Amino acid sequence: MNSRDRFLTAANCGELERPPVWIMRQAGRYLPEYRKLKESYSFTEMVKSPELATEVTMQPLRRYDLDAAILFSDILVIPEAMGQPYHFREGGGIGMDYVLETEAQIDALDETGTAEKLIYMGNALTSIRKEIGMDKALLGFGGSPWTLAAYMTEGGSLKNCSRLKHMFYEDRALFEKLMEKISTALIDLFLMQIAHGADALQMFDSAGAWCSASDYEEMSVKWMRRVISALPTDFPIIIYAKGMAHHFTALIGAGAKCLSVDWTVDLPTFHSALPQGIAVQGNFDPTILDGTAERTVIEATRLLDSMKGRNGHIFNLGHGILPSAKPENVAALVETITNYR
Picture 1 (cartoon, rainbow, N blue to C red):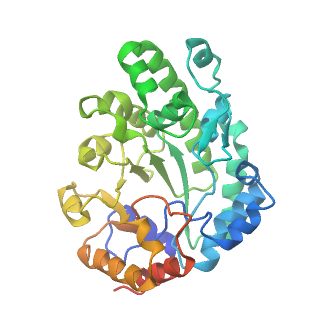
Picture 2 (cartoon, rainbow, N blue to C red):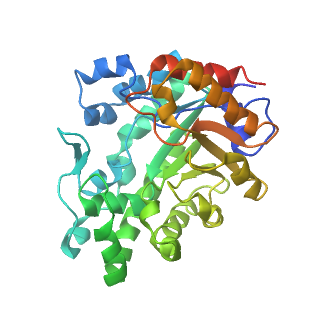
């Protein structure tokens, strides 16, 4: 069984000797070859160049025996395509070129033609597929409508989503107008990623934890459902809703075939609570990769042992890999998983 089949089997809750492995945000600043490339190109330049995006995507796969390649990009390509560009601040963090505050600004957002505007992503996926062939799975991704709206109304890195929540409670019609526009653009993006060879898509509801429990459906879940319902039936969709694993019933109802959870969740207990046919992804604490290889192996083995004999587990981190991760620890992690039986 090749890596692609292993990944798709796990996503469909099939039985495997060991879980497939990929790493959330697997390319990035922890790799010296990425840092070298970053000396010559900005992040957005690399995202918008199919050649550079392919190179960065392939960097971790050249080092490690990963079962999937994840497109090097960013969730904020959607607001940029709609007319609200993003950048990275000198002191760190993400900044939008302006804060979305008024109805006139929302009306000015253009949700049409997203696939054409972001065709560089499609070209990158095509290029990556040529590199990996059909032996490894290829993953696309995007932000949930709620999370994208949070960045757009906060003006950059998230704090408490107060502006978006205020819009939800005080001007529901305006909130829904914004969410419809984002959802339309996101559907176009996801259909384009599928057309260019993505085997699965991950939707990041990273701002979901700022939703109140009673309003999570109306704030976020219904909009994820709106997007997923427009995609091919039974196409593998992974939802990562940070801090919202306890809402798994709602997330499954949105159309998720696999739920990705952070390291605060006891994975076997969570898996046991899921209905049959729903896979899980996670949930190794990425900070462990800052320490020693020995500790990495111990903790990885403990997680693997806890899920032994369970179908439908994709080994992943509980959040994105950190710039402080040690490449030798990532190597130890991947080796531990691939040799596990």
